Image (cartoon, rainbow, N blue to C red; front, top):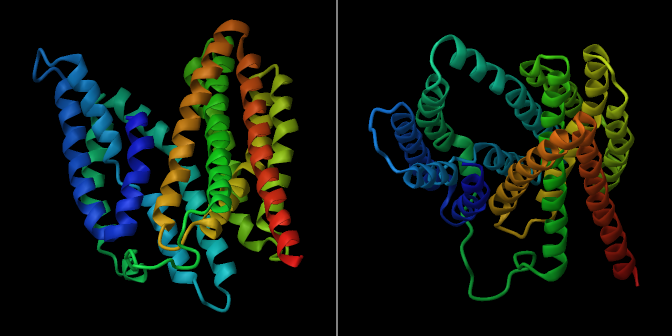
Length: 356
């Protein structure tokens, strides 16, 4: 499902740019709900003898059709605030809200799934997700805010700002690379938290440890709307990511559950602002009429990075313990900083060239 989502998200974003969000989201939501329902039927053994390969293909398609509400909501905020007197401040407030909701979902979603699956039935969380998708995504699709976005229509001649020129490709690529680093940080810290809790004989508490990062990240994301407007977005990105590197290295220190909670609360503080900033920069560098494509590419970067972080950190945790997993988190923070520094350097180079 993760691979399907990473591949399908940009395709859905491109389709939304080309034909409008409503025409893409409604069929995607219904298809996704049906495919998840089919996976439940296969997993519950209602249809015995279903080939494993067919289940894997179904999971891939379920991921590929997963409606990209979060990225496309950000596209709407960008359209709604464009051209307004205080539009930049309003946009930062809206993106801060979106990132806070994302973080709270990352924290509360797994906890809710665990409770429902253990207390009631393992298939119930999936069924609930399918029902919510089928009911709420179409409601979002037909919401009046969707009218703020005009589908991109190809033109006969070149339009300024609409082409995928080399500089724009590099800047979008740096944003995607930054989101891969962000996802790798999430995945590695999650795996490291589970491994660390396992040392104390309670691996199931790893999810609660990881929730500490999400809580402070959500609160810090909300604060971005109050930051000085004169602080350039690439500078924010590089500065917050640079702070993440020593905080990730400090995860080598804790020797108890309580101390680990404190350090995870600290590392969450720069995470939310970095996520808000990368989405903002991505919106700034996206070609005209391709905002949905870029926003979904950024979301795919998080999905890919989370898979990378979980995988690498899991191997390192098995080899040398939780400290190895947290080294992967430090590497992810470094990647996040380098991509931000590259964006900052590229911006300054463009300004210098324009001045000449």
